Structure formats: C-alpha cells, structure tokens
Image 1 (tube, rainbow, N blue to C red):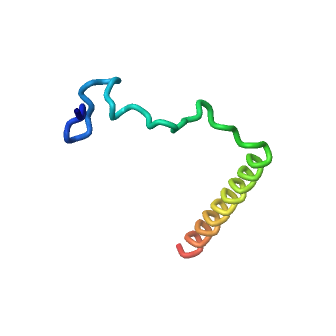
Image 2 (image 1 turned 90 degrees about the horizontal axis):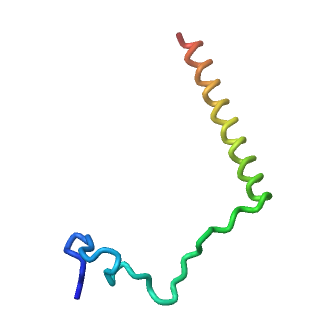
Image 3 (image 1 turned 180 degrees about the vertical axis):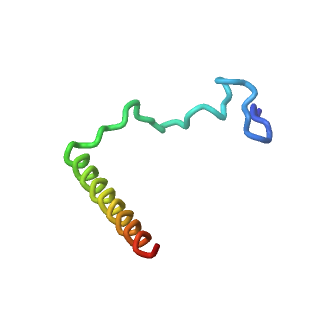
Length: 68
C-alpha cells in the first residue's frame, strides 16, 4: 500500500515505507574534512579570483571617470 498522495506527501509519518532507506545504501554520519593542502589551494584560488575582480572593478571605475 502506498502511503504517499499524488503530490509526494507522506501521510503515515516516519513509518512510511517510501521514506525508508534502500538496503545496502549507507549515508556517512560525518563527511571527511578536506586536507589542509586542499584548503590552502582553494584559499589561494579564491584570493586570486578576488584580486582579479577588484582589479576589473578598479579599471572600470577609472574608465567611467575618464569618460565623464
């Protein structure tokens, strides 16, 4: 018997068979944290991107200032 209506809302709460995880499917409790090396690489990429954006904004501001 299907305990969900046509919109996918379960009417039986937590005991609904549609909500039970499939057999053999395992969800980790805590995801593995990134290694420090990966974090540093991501921060370096983020810093480069931010500097690029600030540079483009500065050039745009100077261009608008010269046009006016």
